[in-house]
Length: 356
Image (cartoon, rainbow, N blue to C red; front, side, top):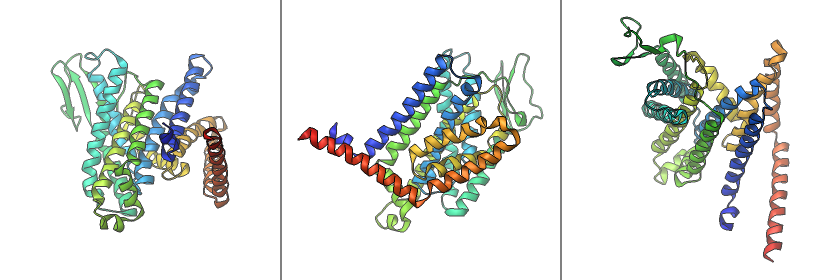
């Protein structure tokens, strides 16, 4: 146990789990005690969703070093897949948490499969070219999902890419209605399930980062030529990061889709991908705890400033600029490093005194 705690990666991982768990317990306690407003209750599930999206994108952008602008597309696939699966299982699976979890898994698998298919041509590119192509694929995925018609009647499930001749028998239910999206969704998402999603995301990403595969992925990021020279299959490890990131985005999308009574494909556009990327950049590239904190703060901030009406987005932009300047300041980095070293020195001193 002591050897594990002496490991720097293990200590940092435990801090991340502790921060997330404390946040969940505090917010859940306040929620059960009736101390949260209706607005704050509505923030809880989206906060968990955006934490998972930021952490999963950080795996690709911060750890792997590949700039992707199509994360919202995978989120959209997960959202609509989750909505369809939850609707189809409504009679077969009575337990709502189980139905929600199955929908999240299916959404993640389909998003991961899409990530694999897209990754085959996309991951041959690098840098700006990769960013542009992933942006294009994200928009393509959004438009494909936004033109699907899915219905359920006595004859079974009907799927079409056009509204022409798409009719349901009497008593049938329209699940996805093309550009209109999904309406009349049975809301299954809960804050505890959001917490479970965050834990799953952190477990997958942190274990991958600290594994042999994670070290190979970071080697590819730091020096592609050197990684190839020692026998690392660069394309395979980039693909692994891409698919895992897409899978987790799909799970988050399913939870997001089942948190509202209606959902349109326009929600998963370029702006959503940029917002997620902002969470990653401001939290620190490769910094998982930073992604958790920035996703929470930056999601709540615009909503908290809503009372300022026309000025809230201006203030939000100013805050982003100030945070960026503060975070990337050499003096701030030096100060944080000094404080961290002092805290570590205190713990090491206490450990020496205890052993002595």
